[in-house]
Image 1: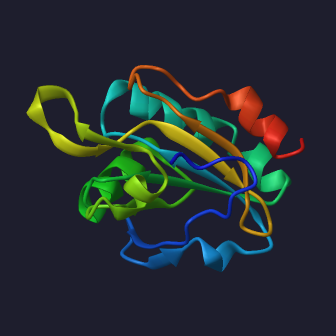
Image 2: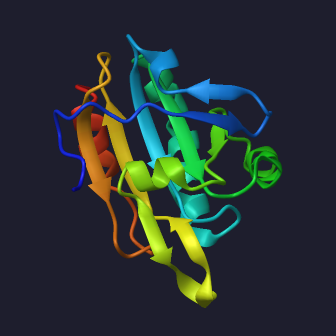
Image 3: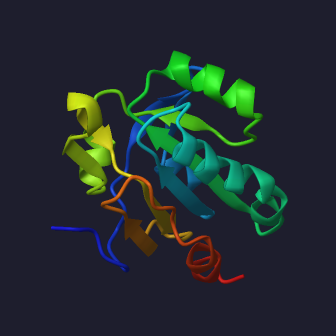
Length: 154
């Protein structure tokens, strides 16, 4: 069953591109914007995360933590983060457990690839509850950034 607004977000621990373990529960008391994306270095994924990068001061100004998650390795994500100058953590869901827990998971993707994160966006409130949930079936679509900002109360 898909996660709904008001549900408690599944907690997780994943390694970031700088090989630091990060958990969702570690951000309790803070709003969190999670962006799932299929693959680093691809056009729409870069556009999705660059939109967050280019508006980072807005999220920082309202004390909201931005996180990007994909099934790429931490090493690929480190290079992607470096090339694009992202100011927020990119987390590796290499084992595909978190993407599946959030319902943001393709069993089969393009080019015969299996087990890839769907493009999705979630806003988690200060208590760990889902305030916004959007899982996109078409990997070429972008999340509704305006709706994300509205869910943040800004």
